[in-house]
Image (cartoon, rainbow, N blue to C red):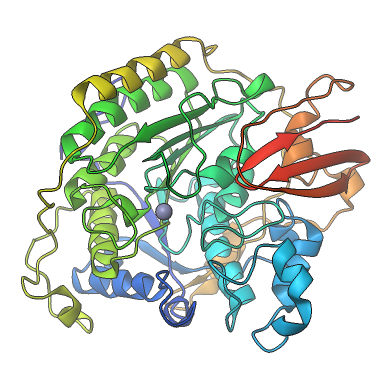
Length: 481
Ligand SMILES: [Zn+2]
């Protein structure tokens, strides 16, 4: 396998990595509704391909332990989580105000089993983080996760709970710094927003920008306060091909790894950036998309691979199957094995599909400008900031069940998550106060850009009042002691 990312010392890239793969056989049964582009069935199709390519034997296959209410509330507001737990298609007519308040109903519909779906996909991502924290694997995979648009108290863009934020919070229990990379065609707004004011998490999102959902992710948005230059945005235009994409991805991510030195990396592999996506407008091949996985893997840093968008589902399954092979260091044959969803892949029945001949609107000049702007931001970063480490908080209990139901060993190797009073927790329970606390106690932070309208909510956590003004798709954060 090709070597990349030489800016950090890394072993020979051909060396096998130990991979933990999270999959719940129920996940393909959740259904957003007729005509909705988000289809959890694509996760089951991916799994079937993995099985028939013989990849399941080469990794540790785990059924995620459903995330509990208190796990979800480490980031999300209690009333929002409680709403998700209780809402059903039958009762939603009686809760119109709540639906509107939490942005549930249209893009993010109420469907049967919605809450279990959230628990399942969040459980896989947090479980992956726990596995990495324990050093049980080098790479953890949860293709059902990566729902990067969900906010603290609002659903958005087909996402209800933000499994990525939850997984990063878990990784922060062990690692001083965590890097988040997002190659979905949409801006990773929910994750960026959660960590906008901290230098412990760096977020880098590559996305279509300009008259496109969610509307955020301007190159000038770089983080705020302690987090300044720790949020990076790479705005791209229609039709970007493999070569143009990698001309930004590799130099930028190479520099990020060199300067930020993360203890763990989370890579959101949204497949709507592939050529021919039902909602997307990029022109990446599966190999071009997977090159990002290959590159991030080459640094030999614990890696969490997550799914995300992807709406031409046969290509999503192709892509995530191929990328599982990349994680394992196995090159898969192009000719697809016979399996239960074989008919989706006609007429060629191959793993790879040619990109289209659409115009690439990203001129060389524009790409060069973006690249130099971002490298300039990176040069302003202090080398690898360090935090004063507090006592390590207890792990999230994740006794996920092995596919072969050999759960005993799994339970024995994960720590018990002590149910202690919020007041006594070494780290406060909520992401915002967790990071804001370290800053000057009496300052008022205001950070903003523009989008549609405003929702106001407040959270009381560990004695801190945290008014949190959320303007659709963009945040205004005020801090009060
Ligand atoms: Zn997307």
